[in-house]
Length: 186
Figure 1 (cartoon, rainbow, N blue to C red):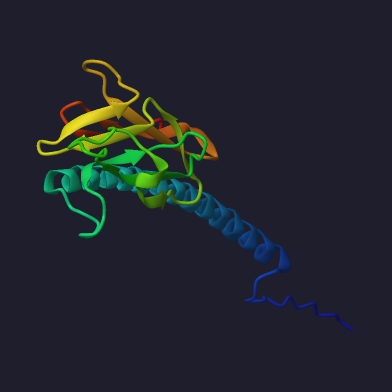
Figure 2: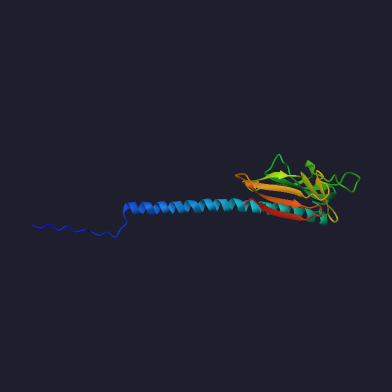
């Protein structure tokens, strides 16, 4: 009697092949997810830098147009942005109110002049600024920094990601009112 051994050729995957394939797919997926999260946070930094520049231009335009909040409000002598180093997750748009019996404001931020508190996106913070406020005074508009920076020095506001301190976005305002933006460290 002769035993005949036949081998069955299976067309299915073995358990080891399936585990290796699943491991490769998992590794690739995690790399894509990490890259996607990093690009999302960098995108938030760029978006927020553009937003701060937009709000600076908004204050500048309102000063040139001398928009009033409403007809019953006090007279506005300028518009500005206030950066509070104690609260790095927001900045304030304010209207510089005229001093009583004068046609000029104090050319800096006072808490009663607040128009809008503008929060930064989650994960983004202002980490350095050489000014606390910039005020645009009509009609040209003339620029006033607080504290005064002297001749030829631009105001600078730097924002960064909280979890990536090496990369930052810098917004500068010149004495002529030009607004520059630059991404650093990425």
